[in-house]
Image 1 (cartoon, rainbow, N blue to C red):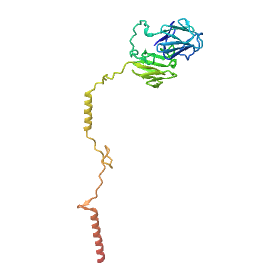
Image 2: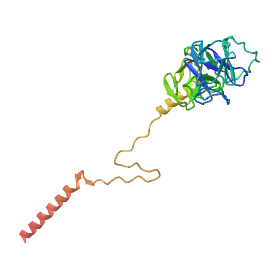
Image 3: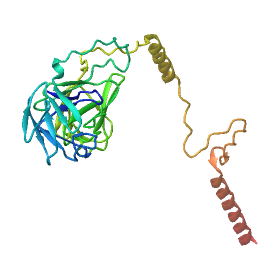
Image 4: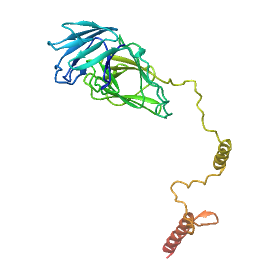
Length: 294
């Protein structure tokens, strides 16, 4: 995939994504340019793979390698184009030799190796490494700037921390999607997930979870388990106190036992009632005999 780079290095370059990019001073353009000689909608770059055409709009001036063009004109790798007073060049980052940089210091937050891999035609397999917190959008000051007309100027935030990667939508107009489900809050990503910013699709590349990794559990204290089993066994073997009989409250500690109810007394083993009846019968017979004799 080709890139449009400012020749004076004043701003970040933009990736040329199909089908086209709009250039001008209006904020609705994919590439917003500043200058008194820049029209609101100054020009368009039509993209089909690595094939490019620059087309002026509204009679505004556009130049290719110093020559003014009147209509849609093919441009190629290495060509310099000028829109108003802004000059840019078509470059292929794959052919650019990056300047030597000092090796970055190890960091706990930058060791995950996360990246987004483009799936869009004309940008297939282009890889953007994610380090720390990065903003993706079509604005020039985004960490990942892509000139795609359906992407918001600041579309979403990608955050790599602690070996994990997440994405958060920044109130974009056309939405952020993870595996075809729209997300608005911070959402954790894993290797192989499909992320879309509107219809611009990427696949997440990063560390894969090791399903064969052995989980180490804490050591078991066998002696403590055996001691607990013995304690529970002794508690179960202790005799339980007898339950009080229903209807009679158990005597309270320290109180005298209630006297047993007195049984009816007997004489010679005979019931008291029978003896009383016999005495009464004798008295009646005696009174009757005295009456007749008198």
